[in-house]
Image 1 (cartoon, rainbow, N blue to C red):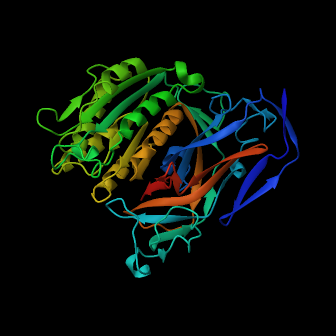
Image 2 (cartoon, rainbow, N blue to C red):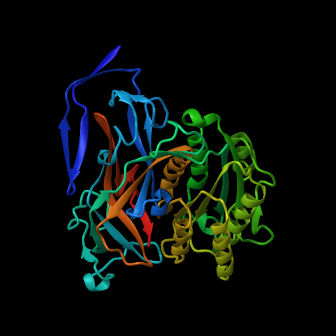
Image 3 (spheres, one colour):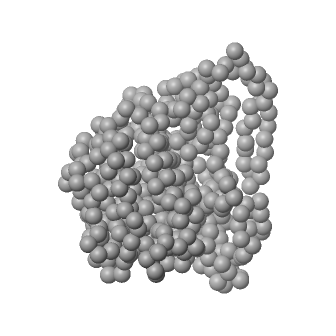
Amino acid sequence: MKAQWGCLKFACIFAGLLVTSCDTVAELTFSDEQLIELSPVGLVPSRCLQQAESDAVFRFSVLTSFDEMMTPGRRYAALGDLLVPGYNFVASDIMVADGWFFVVDTAGRDVVCNDAGDCPTGASCLTPDEMGLGQYYYAPNKYCAFQTSVDVASDPVFYHYRDKMTGDDAHVTSSLADGRSFAFVIDNSATLDGSESTGVPDSAKATDPYQYRKVGLNQFMDGLTVGRDASGKLEFSATMANGSGTIGVYDMSKSWMRSIAVWNATVMQKYPTPSGGSPVWEAAAAALDKLMDSANTSYSHTILALTDGEPNNGSEETFRNFSRQLTASDVSAVYWLDFGAEDAPGHKPYADIVSQSCGAYYLFSNAAQFPVIMRNIALNTASHWNIGLKFSANLPAGQMYRLATTIVVRVGKTAVSFEAQRKIEQQSAMDYRLVISK
């Protein structure tokens, strides 16, 4: 049975304008594999692509109609041929709109201004309308922001944790790992359910009143089962940071869990009630120690941290020790998900830790976004694409920024896109801007 597609639309972005054009009629069968979703991880350090001309690397996966991830050496309907990076999938197939770097303060908020004098040198003080972002969900303030063009500085490079998909190819790389080890650092402080003052949960004060943190962990596990990597070797550990009484920092898994069923029985069914403060760095150090001491040495090693505010006072030395240990370790990526508590300083050190690895940092105030991000990270730990980006903006160091832009990935006669903006989804504001730390 065949389906007639009268118009395969490809979106091109020029100076912030969205233009669509109609290609010739294509006839596809329902058995043809088609591209359906761009699943980004975000911006990772430029050294992760080993290309000095890039300012950052955009990392993403593309899902197909076969519930697979787009990989080299496979035939796709819109391409009509095998996908070969560097040949029929190149830098010109990725387009990034001119965008804006919003300046972020130490409390994780966009910096509001009255005029450019309130902003870092070189930044503008503009409303979202003046930036051309009026269709998105930004509060009607003036914000400190740097306008930027974004150039794609490299052909797409495909990474797989285990397999060399097309032999010796400069556009395909692999860690040649036998499996994947995930060490979770989970802040379980009382601010999550709003019980920090009275000991009684208060949804009005809670950073995660509907327990999206648990939904996100389940989404991560579901993401690991997508595609041909579902049968891959996995192992998990979970270190909780409650910070109360005898609980404190503790290991949910005395030995590594090597199936999702064991994870569910050990962590999800025994997830403790939030309490106390946030001994985040102590929990991160404990998780790293376990990863270095007892994880399978032939696996790729990843740390995933969930926090909702600043760490406990007095843990600066633990932070420095953790940073030194991380540099000396074989951890391939750190993903840090930081939500809620926008009035609490302390976010920058989290972003600085991520900059030591080939992971990404996420800063958002709506916990409902957590499951979306966790699924994307899970997909990307199996395989992903990297492209180098070059920014025209001269961003001052020592600062965090959120990049608002739109990215389009074209393969043959079709394309998938990602809007890195603040948008409304399910009656909630979701912030998909890409975070970068300088």
